[in-house]
Amino acid sequence: MLELVEIKESEAWNRLVAGFPIASPLQSWGWGEVKRLTGWEPRRLLVLEGGSPLGAAQVLLRPLPGGLCLAYAPRGPALGRLEDLPRVARALAKGVRGTHLVLEPEAGLPVGEAPPTFAGLFQEEPIQPGHSLWLDLTQGEEALLRGMKEMHRRNARLALRRVELAIEGEEAFPEFFRLFAETNRRARLLQHAEGYYRAVLKEMNQPLGEAFLALARKDGEALAAGLIVGFAGKVAYLYGGSARKHPEAKAPMGMHLAAIRHGMARGYRVYDLWGVPRTPEGSHAEGLFRFKEGFGGKRVQFPAYALPLSPFYRPLRALLRLRRTWVNLRVRRDPRDVLG
Image (cartoon, rainbow, N blue to C red; front, top):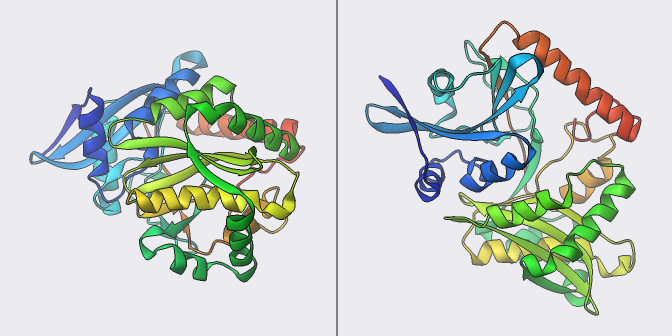
């Protein structure tokens, strides 16, 4: 017998989510508070079986025109086993109202492995990046360096000599945002308003989690900066940017090394480079992929599923895909997703 319980206290929720083997920073309490800024309403739902936790999902609800509503668990639910997903999904459906429920458990499956299929769940396009690279922080810095491609390893050692590495907080936000916005303009990428990223830095500093800025400076000037979040054993590189000046300093590499060292010192197990294209050759993000691939690590994929909750599921899904394609064309003159 499955039971659904809503959790309304941040530390209790984070402790529950972090206790599952399959868990994500985007299922933490703070991420739900960030998403309130863009019109989502978070609900934190625990699924119990025989009194024991079976799964937990922070479900974001968003009203759509025509009285419709989308229900979405970003990189969730948190699970003990991926095989429990169908039962957890059916339990969650009793606690939310929407046209369909989108689920993206952070299973980290090997690339090339066919995602499992489940009766009653449709395979769906992920909303978050569907592929990433995970670095194993438990091996230590020297082993991690040995696992990099030769050019990356050389650049890492250059960065350690040529830039100053720093971990900072809100005081460095203007430097981060300047570099982030500059990089997005060069790459023709969309971004939220400045207040959104300030909220990420604030709200993800939460019980059992943290957010920080990793920077690489030369002569005091920030050349690369990243906004990193940590939760449930992972540190994830969500946003970042760099200047084009002083390429010889290898500042982007230095910024990642700062975050990696911080993650190791704090006992995190995984550094998530957060988003690479499924098929990099010829994509808008091929250069990004080549940079991240140079770190070595494990390339992983995140399956996504939809549980239909109304007859409007298929037409709404088609409309959402059409809108995404239109935005891609308007911004980059390319119908494909950046990480598609």
